[in-house]
Image 1: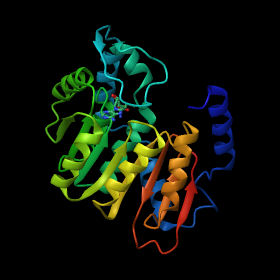
Image 2 (image 1 turned 90 degrees about the vertical axis):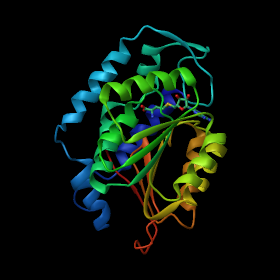
Image 3 (image 1 turned 180 degrees about the horizontal axis):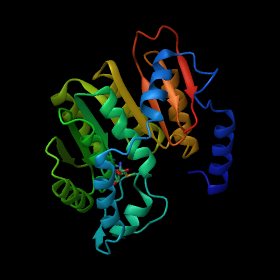
Image 4 (image 1 turned 60 degrees about the vertical axis):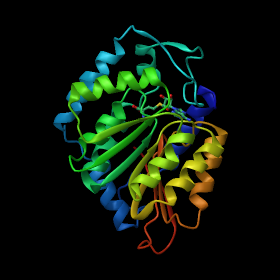
Length: 265
Ligand SMILES: C[S@@+](CC[C@H](N)C(=O)[O-])C[C@H]1O[C@@H](n2cnc3c(N)ncnc32)[C@H](O)[C@@H]1O
């Protein structure tokens, strides 16, 4: 992974070269709509405070749990015994990005969502809250972390989500076969090049013309940047949006020419 200094340098570079979404720079009506209706929507949706209250509980949870180390995810804690509040502080998507995921679901209304990397269940909760008719399948390898996430889902009373426990290598193929088509996927676990590309290729086999694939931490390391570049080049990918901390991938054949956007968020 990149050092904080390297990452800050990369972020500044992104910030200076990214479009602010206004005026010139964005010639795609689809992307313009995404910016206007989703990205810059400042409304305070009711679920925001309800889910953030659960994050607050996790940020104060002193319980020590045994955690299996599956991937390159955590940059802060190295041991197998972890304090829940430290996981909550270091592994979860910020409020800003988690709420963007909610708005993406709310706006595009995907029927089936797959999330790789539940952790304590905060992004899963936002994804599930986006639409009551959406079915979310979220996967987590660590049993004790999954148990904590289950508690959060119970507290929030979400019934449209299923937690699939186990290593993605074992759980993803049967999950995808059982679901057939995926409308949205959030890939937020095992931030290494080959696994990320592997998940991308598997998800692609179950995609439709309107599927959205969202990759986390695309600039986190040289490996993740290499994976992101390879994904962008794939023949089926027709549009990408780089928001630095996440990258959105569209494979919609209605977009005639391949376009890659970098948008300030
Ligand atoms: C960054 S956290 C997910 C955070 C969550 N999406 C959020 O923002 O609320 C990544 C999670 O993926 C899990 N993970 C990583 N690699 C995995 C693998 N190969 N199989 C199963 N789980 C894995 C880790 O245990 C960790 O809890």
